[in-house]
Length: 177
Image (cartoon, rainbow, N blue to C red; front, side, top):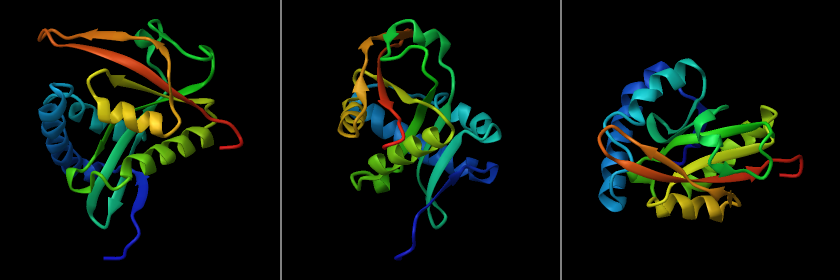
């Protein structure tokens, strides 16, 4: 191949492939870590993310390698996590996945660096992420890439009876990084 991968905002025409790649990511992740995502989340949010220009993709020619969303508010989750600076302008990173055929190749770190750049260029002071406690691979990736685990835990309860304990991780963006 030898082609360069392209990082860009997702387009509505990407939606079918994004959903199909994330369906496989979800099945794979849930097999390894127990249920974290389901048929509804994150796939049902992608169309809205695309329309609101907050879903980013990494493409290898026409193949989706990875995607993540960036947004600016997590009101109900704020209370239980003690961020370094509660009032700082923060961008939230989530709905992140790497195509199973590209896992183990450093794509996660590449995507985190893209997210840091986008957040910084948009004038944010922090990049923040919520991670389910049993998703050890994600927590490891975030720590390895300089994100600090904040004190506290957000407990999310679903009608299905599923309970997810989520930790907050943050990265302070400044003019030197």
